Image (cartoon, rainbow, N blue to C red; front, side, top):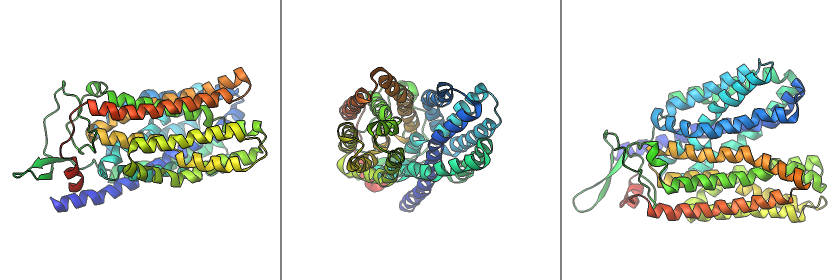
Length: 447
């Protein structure tokens, strides 16, 4: 059993490399939205509302489709789901390059390509990577998550240069092919399911990890176990999604992700406009936002590693507390004259950027077995999608009603605070739901 365990641990690094590459691709896809928005608006002479509908529909599709994608991940496995996702991205982007009206763009970009993007996004990465590193899943998820801001750094200027040089239609075709090649072949050839393991107690009470033999399907009436005191075993029989959605910790994670995303997107989309309204130079405001992404390349792995040591709830509280501090800082002392508030904002926001997703993903890996993680993270992603869709609209509405961002920023602080409470609620409800694993320490040492 020892050589097999070593092989499994070694191959986990291959899965990490694939996960990092997938998130670089996702970061590139998300980062191109601002430049695509301008290119489409100017090319078709659409209003801001009509052009925005392309990206708003993408957020809605991502929210509604995430639970189904999570279920497909559990059923098909990442080896097949991720290449299909890459193919949908390539087809969606290439087909979008030929559109002459709004509705085909809504179909190919907002639906087809968005389903592909969500197939290889952070929630499927968490469900795929977490079981391979039960002792350091926060650290590994944080390292992999650094691929998202790296993708933004690589593809945002590339997309802008290509659009300025050869036009948006050819840019769509080139980037669609690049995104497919980054995701499809490598995942199909190298992706694997996590090792199937269980704990067997030998005479004398010693717990020994063993390869899990094929097992019959779970009883429809069985609820998925949670493991509040440590990490779930890598393999437990698949559980019907109807039983998963009855678990209180699942909805605690969904609410934590929803409230945190809604709070952050209330402000993030409007930050440049806020800084400009406060009197800062537009270039300096944009540089501050870019600086947040640069700092987050270091902040995400650091946050993940600290969550392994300090605990998920503590790190979630500290990280989102820094985000609250960043919001209050720019709201109270961002006067357009002093540069140090922007510098401090970059540090606080960068170190806390992405922490909501990676800590929630690590917590889900702690509580639920690998064969249920796809559905669990799909539901969590649904909450994130709703937050992405509603946050910018709510922030803009509050600005239109008041003429400033004060109420939007204060509401963001309140929502992020609620998210922290939801995460601590997950810890309490996990202790009340499902059996705990009696041999978690031995399992960790064995794996």
